[in-house]
Length: 284
Image 1 (cartoon, rainbow, N blue to C red):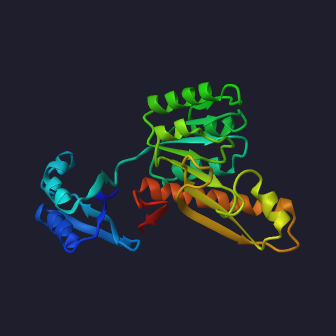
Image 2 (cartoon, helix red, strand yellow):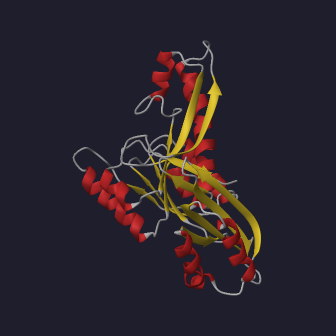
Image 3 (cartoon, rainbow, N blue to C red):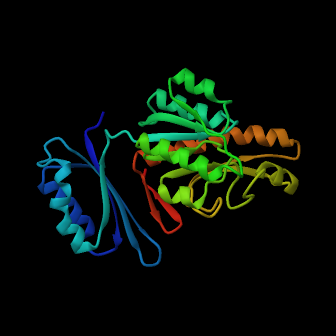
């Protein structure tokens, strides 16, 4: 396992930014492994991901703010730092469709997703067998129009007790309330079974079939208070023809959904995503 630090940076672009950050790491004994940066928008807003080897780095990362603050103030930098060894705690929400859940659990188990999954939350008991197989607590919280506020409070309490860093909606067929979302800003990833912004809302495969499209898609995105409108992280597409039935579209969609969602989750937990407005910048 790499022993490295990862610094994510956002600020107005200014001459000398790259040099200031690189010199800071160099003069404190760090060996830069990756330095990726991007200027976004007409104003060329600066976004960067810097990773360096901590072997020989002269101070503990808990003291990083003290040493880096002068540079951050000079360039008006918003930043956060973590390590490659940090394993974020991920909660998975699921309803009855289990294909995305199964894929996430498999990838986490074989090491593709460097995270912990301390619990799974569902409004149905159907997927419990997968949680039992992996030894993960499975919490059934039924949700109705009448009890939704109470159900969400129960879910939020479970998330708090388990110190959750990221929520993944793996075909969780409930719309989260704005209050719920405000508790976890930029920490909820959803998979929508269409190529957004086309065919938002329920039954997108039916909409696509009725429209006679030749491409269908799946979209992983951050959840915001506006339904299916959050910053897009990843999308997958597949060709279809007049021979494909509605059932064919659903089957092809499932393959895209699990791959697209897993890829988005991996980029998030590896700290490769920065948000700029309603867009994402993803560093490879």
